[in-house]
Length: 622
Image (tube, rainbow, N blue to C red; front, side):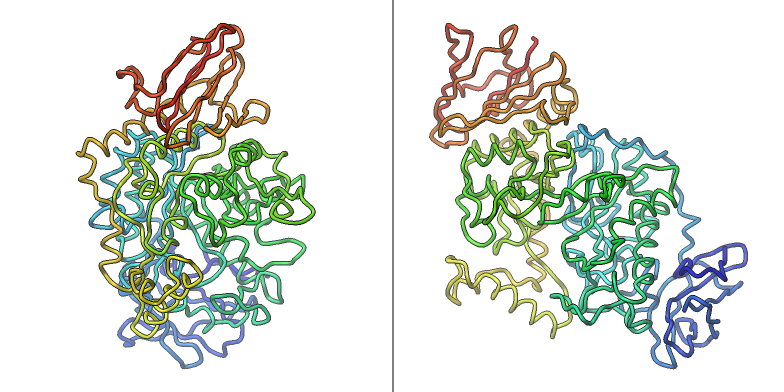
């Protein structure tokens, strides 16, 4: 319905109600705004409202019609709140009747904190076709694998025909590269029918460099006093900040309410410049509860500052988010197994003691030191383990590498299997990046499709980025870094699904499936409380994880040394450990792997002798 007379900024963009098509745009400094049809054969003057917005109702405009705006006679420009851009970011906007989007499945309950297993995917490279519909055909595979939450990398309209999505500019419009709004609805609906929750990665810290028309309508959306790598910061705390806040509240509500996503992952919240007494992020959860009271939704933040405030309750001065991306574990594990020690890996020593400290804490940088890396971050002890999203790889940790190499490309497979067991048996919320579950051969490279002038700058900047790394210190080596603008860079990043028929890859997949089944079903793995988990170094060989819940126990001995070693296990309280799975088994009940050799000790403990890296998992009671 049309809303007028309120001091707040009301619904933006184009929507349909009983009066016809409604249009509203925020442009407080403009003297005139004209609505024009695609061919400019029809124009209508919009009426200015008290809140600095302009409004128009067109009874005869139908869904699917194309339109743009003239601002003080300049333009025409696409609607920055467009629901679809069929001809790209510079083309006309299309009217979409969100009421007509058809859902058939009911929204399943959110998985409990202990059951949240996130699978991150990039729609454009997840399948050869790179579309919502093609990805939808893979949903039964993901259900069978055992993940519970899918996370789509950003899908909002971006310039060109391919990209990661973090340079989006039409943030309300599903990218035409992936399909139509109806196709996106079909993907979410099918996911729900299979019991899968769906999260969306959204970018609320900047707009891309090409096709952002928001500033044409109001300079107040940006804060010129603060410059970021993407230009002026968004105005979350200056005069008139209500406009940009409302823009993003509306955006979040669209994805959660109209497309029925189950949650959001907020990209790089450390890049949101907001020193106000009531930060945008602190208000977001409140707004969502107020506007969608009938649904619980998940909100995660990506923030390298390790901020505990994000996950504290509102009564504790927190933002009441469900979790934060916690990269410290990844950095220590990568340092320990692959030897990375440059760039942001440099402060992480990868020692077994610090891996265990990170596992037990949730993150390593906890604010406990007066100087150095521990002085960063904040105390994690008030947060349960589900609040920390951990991974062996994600789009950043792969794609920000010069050659897009995945962790399993650089370490022995037995070490990778051991790490996979560590990830999926730890109490934190695990995230898998598409293809890691079968140790796929394809890289995930950084790729773009900008116009030639901007594309040349992106290519040059990408190669300069690695000049400080030993492997790319000379110009000849930097020329080996794949060109982000080349179509082959994108194509080489697509998942090779045919590998699932290769026994070596299928064996890894079956091991992942067994671990995920165990994680979802064993009682000892259903607690995310502190006190129900311990991680202990085992000499120089590896570590021991123990999970507890009531009378149930699960123990995992993880050997991370490629040449193997010995891990001694203490006696099980009240009984003996029953072997359940090793990293060389494909599933429980299959012939046991030969690694490790298990030797019972007189005191009831066990001596495990690994001939190579691996994981030995046992449960109690039997």
